[in-house]
Length: 110
Image 1 (tube, rainbow, N blue to C red):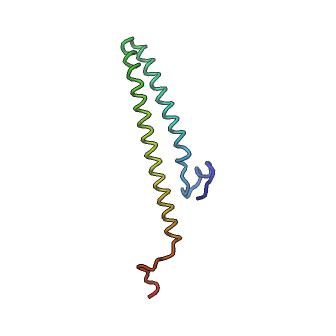
Image 2: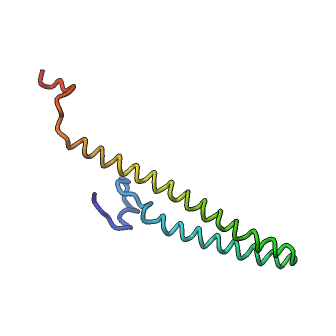
Image 3: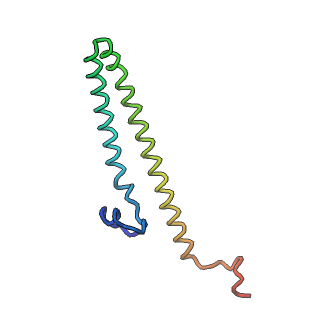
């Protein structure tokens, strides 16, 4: 497989190389950072609204944080699986194109 650079993949108009594998880790880190910011702001707004709401936010924020990170992880893994399947199908197709005909069902010799 031809390993192109990141920018070569981004501007590849034939879409033969996928950029998703390079970007997915960054997107996952952004999702985690977003979940952290959300959890901290929920706790801060909870305590700003009152002590009881602050305590509730302090208890629920880690649970919500973990759910958001888990959902982001599952989503990213699904994307990776789809692109790995596409790569595998491409490899299988390439191998089938290279393989000589077995003669079975080949009517060119008649």
